[in-house]
Length: 195
Picture 1 (cartoon, helix red, strand yellow):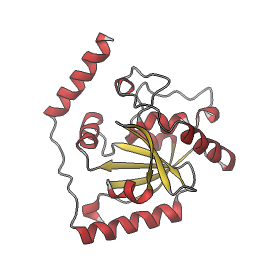
Picture 2 (cartoon, rainbow, N blue to C red):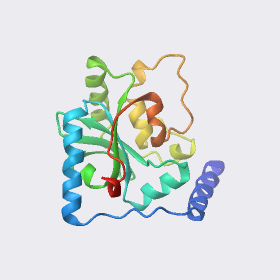
Picture 3 (cartoon, rainbow, N blue to C red):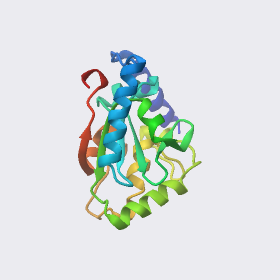
């Protein structure tokens, strides 16, 4: 436990040494236009159980992006029927309406998990719904995961566990920016300043 705590403190300290990217919200009118573009792509391209992978505006998102060296910091599971995204964040596993999820995203990718098919999608989303209310796995983000808690990318991969093959090996810490390794990117909004 002391090792995990020390690792977590070191990770936070190192993040403070890195140059934080400037990620700021566009003016309201432009933000609404961009939100509409992203939501339109989700409605047109995303299927139940797809991963919506983002770089967000929150300080935690920027810390994660800097700590992992990836331009992506978060992921949620698309729940098409509920028009929501099931995500694990510091408050735990929760369901967020798609428009609110998009509004907090500076960049958004739709990734179709390689295990996704008609049967697995429905079961994976049902599993994600069953995890609503679970606590966030803070120690999991430094490799000391707890089976009853989840961080965002851990949850995204775990809901497809019944379809993983014996040959698949996952890193101790699953980074949101590496989810493309287990899926196909079907949309990338690019950063908002490029839209």
